[in-house]
Image (cartoon, rainbow, N blue to C red; front, side, top):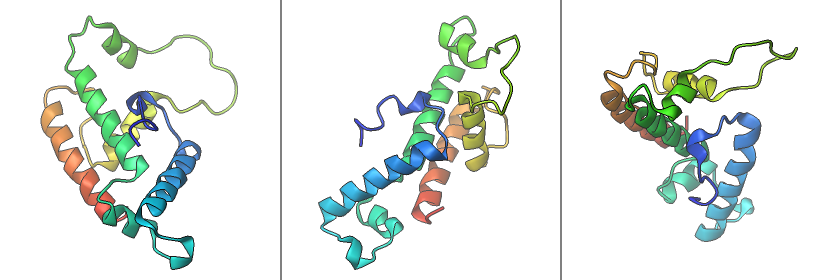
Length: 142
């Protein structure tokens, strides 16, 4: 899984991207555990039996960890400028694509981080709490 999710902390993923990755992960875990589709074992049970998180939870944790790393950088560093900067100009018509900031805000809301992620004063404690929430939600199949 580490090769499959390499550099996943900077992906702006949507459900269409996660679904094939999750299918691949579950198929690999089924083969490793020797569980057939005919056994009708739910995916949550397979993840618990293998003591691993879902692809979505792993990517969420990677994004939050990277976000905390960039948030603690000095303001003059290029990664921080690029992450918190905004592009000026006209956008093409239609629904805008999801940006990394959109996905990161969704992750923060999912982990019940009430402060916006741009507030860097309490990033370490928020990220530590969010990882425990991610593990808890993954254990309950949310």
